[in-house]
Length: 376
Image 1 (cartoon, one colour):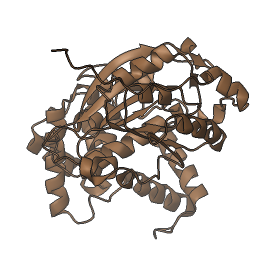
Image 2 (cartoon, helix red, strand yellow):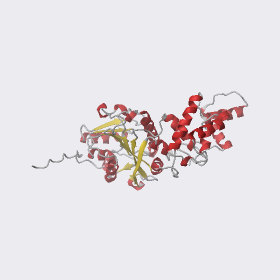
Image 3 (cartoon, helix red, strand yellow):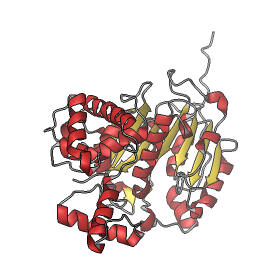
Image 4 (tube, helix red, strand yellow):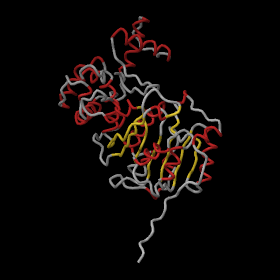
């Protein structure tokens, strides 16, 4: 009896190369959008393989651009590929690709930061959170300018089980500036350990896949690119609201060269700062002389639990922001007024700059240009 033949995967018909598509539609990468084209199909195929088997899978590709990675996803056997592209210059080329893969490729002209992915796929693919991940993948060669805010948004979605995670533990395979990729996977005491390390690792199993040299892209970026794979954990390592964990981690890492106690103190109003910080550190049983990079996820978990308890006992503590207290303090000092007057946005920015200069405070900075998520 003859062995059953394997069903061949879908293969795209002959098409113009990605380079030819770029010339055909007069496309060029825009520096202000951090666009870099990856034309080598061997590399796009390699990125797709990191996602696992895509045979008959549902996939969302973020920012497909001229469609190189899109072709690799289709050739890997995806049954349903949804691409979300913000730049309308790429839509005609993607529509051409859609015509070559009838019923398999859906093109959405929109912004992934606002697109309702929870409505993008059939509910039948949904899996219980504790079960294996659904047959749904998010894949993207992300522009540097959007990659950090996007992964932070998705991490919050994972915590709340919203957005693309209403279907279950949807997996992600994404590119990042190499430095950001290193932060995402950085272990305790690593020089690259950061706010982003904690936020990603307490919610996901994070794996570095491989590095793509900058010379592989057109135009060539100044840095190399790392491919990172995320699988949401069935149980997060910290069972507290995302906003609370993020606030604790953000405050700790804003003074990354100092003892962690310094950042913890800034969670509290000036009049109660030292006392409540001492209570929090004692209750969490965390050494106050550890540097932020030396804190493990269990340490952060203990700090988050202690902070949560203090918030439940002190009304308004969760929404307290020491920067606003500094703004008001310096505004009143300049005006000679004891009343708290509202500041204009311009005054608030100027006051914060003055407060950092006069008191030597190292404030958290989020740079879109180099994706720095905390002071270094």
